[in-house]
Structure formats: structure tokens, C-alpha cells
Image 1 (cartoon, rainbow, N blue to C red):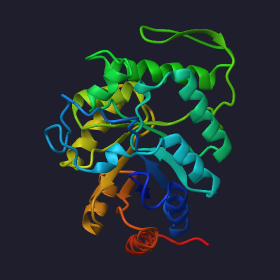
Image 2: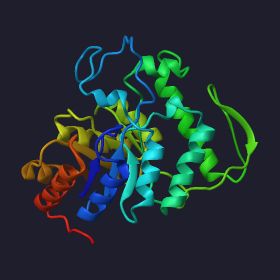
Image 3: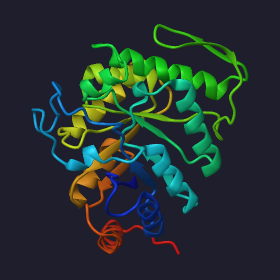
Image 4: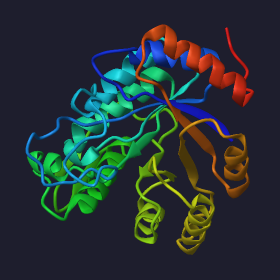
Length: 284
């Protein structure tokens, strides 16, 4: 099982470049950042953790652009994977987002995976023109359009929400594809969508009953004739060796730990301590 780090980016505290470089030196495999383009002041959407319009962290208001953040991380690292937990492709035009992601993958040497979400903040989605009740369909179509641009020499696409004629777009992803992971609750409906349109699952921060949900995902995966095994990225809280051992046994492929909202030296010390507990080998 691999180990990753997620930084809830903001305009204060440790920068993505410093955090990614420290995580790579400590031996972690992947570096994740989130996305919110903005937070509407007046919202009908309830946050999944609070159950109402209140937010559990003011960093929701202050998140950095994920692709700029990962670009700065790519410039100061060589090995660590670069991903989102999670990005919101439904809020972007797929032509420009495909170019941004492919450029980052090209410049980083093929280190990018795309963690995506449907988006809990329907008010935010509405500001981007995503029709009510259509966030799943828009995400699927945007992913399909981006995959066309990433894989076809002359790409074209005709859908309900996106249409473009035959077009050239380079660079292409280094490994010819960008793996897509869905960050969503572990339900049969979400797993069915995932088996059709993605390559793996990122758990929610409060996911429970993971053994049963992994087994459910693997069953649905087989029913959709997916020959490979899904990537399963579990968001961990504190370090719990017994939990990590159970996850590895059940089929979790990566455990991801959040960084504290603390000064740079404190975050670096935390990474060193956590790597020691996990038995990860440090690099120079």
C-alpha cells in the first residue's frame, strides 16, 4: 500500500511547493490538493460534514487554484505523484482544462492523476452554469471530451453540454491517458458510475465500513467487465497501524494523510514523524 499527503491549500501557511518537496523527501508517494473556484456567500447546499450551510474550515474560502499549485509542486520535485482530492471539472470548459492538465503531465514527466468530484456545493456549480440535477452528466461529458483531446490526433466531440469540431491539441499525456479517480461516498450508485467512467475511488473523509464498501466496489467493477483492479485511495485521520493493515488486506491501494494548518517548520516536522511511524524510507 502506498502513502500520500493532501494539503488543504490556502493563501497562508506552507506553500504547495514546500509541502510537496517535504513530502517527497520524507518518502511519500503522492501529493494531493483540493479545488473550489469560489464559495457563494448565500447557499442552499449543505456541507456534507456540518449538515447545513456552515463550513468546517475557512480554507474553503481561500483554496488556491489546484493546477497552479501542482505546477509549483512539479517544479521542485522529481518523483512524487501529483493529484487532486478533488477537482471539479464540471466547473471548467473541457478544452482549456484538458490543455492545462496535459501540460502539467508533460512538464512533470507523466506524474498526474485526476481526482474528481460531482461537487457538493450546488450553488457553486450553478454559478458555472451547471444545470440543477445534471452535475453527474456534466462531469461525465467533460471527462469524455477531455479524453478525446488527450488521445486523438484530430479530436471532436458532440454532446449535450459540450460540442467542438475536429481540433488539434497538444501536448498529449505522457502515458497516453490520465487516470481518473472519483471522490464520493461509497454507495452502489456512485460505484456504478465509477466503474463506467473512472479508474478508482477516493473515499470521503468520514467514510466508515470500508471493508464492505471495497468489496462492493470490486463486485461492481467485475460486473462491468473491468479487467484491472480499481485504485482505492482512503483518506486517513490519525496514524492507526491496525486500521492501515486492515485497509491493505481489503484492497486499499493508498492511504492519504492531511497536513496540519501550521507554520512551515511544524508541517515539515509532522511529515518526518509520520514517515517514521509508517516506516517510509526518506530520500535526500
